[in-house]
Picture 1 (tube, rainbow, N blue to C red):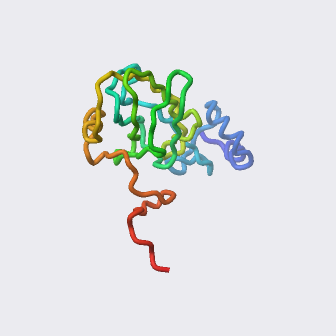
Picture 2 (picture 1 turned 90 degrees about the vertical axis):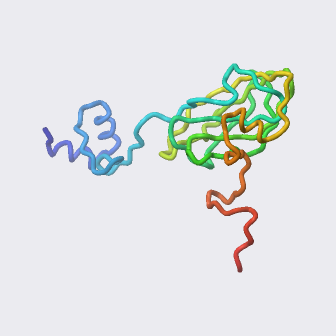
Picture 3 (picture 1 turned 120 degrees about the vertical axis):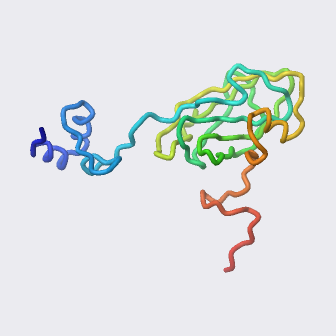
Length: 188
C-alpha cells in the first residue's frame, strides 16, 4: 500500500528515503529503469574478472605475451588500472591496454623473460569501471614462464585465444573521441 507520507519523505530527504528503500521500509516506485523518486541508482554489483590469459597460477612461454583480462560486464574503454604486485615481477608492457569489441575484454601487449614468476595487480587503483560507472574488484594475476619462447605477435594472439583483429595495440587516442592518430589533422 502506498501512502503520501512516503512521498513526503522521498521528496524532502532523498538520502534518508534511499536508505529506507534499501532497508525495505519504503515501497520502490520506479520512474525509469534506474531512477527512484528522482535519485539515480546504479544497480548491481561491480564488475569482476571472469577469466585471464595467462590463467592465474598458469605458465606461458617467454617472449611476447598478451595479457587478457575478461570482465563479467561491459566496461569503459579509458577506465583501467594495472601495476606491479609484491607477489612477483612486473612484465614489460605497453602503457595502454585495448578494450576489444565485446566491451568486456582488455588486452595488453607485454614481454616476459624465461623461467620467471610474474604478478600484475588489476585495479589496485580502482580505475577499471563498467559502463554503468561501477568500479571493478581488485584482482591479482600471477603466472610463470617456461623456457620456450614466443617471438611473434600472431603466435601470442593465438596462445591467448585471440584473432589477428584483436591486436592489443591502440590505433587511436583522443580522450575517447576515437580519432585515428594517422588521420590528417582537421583544417583550421
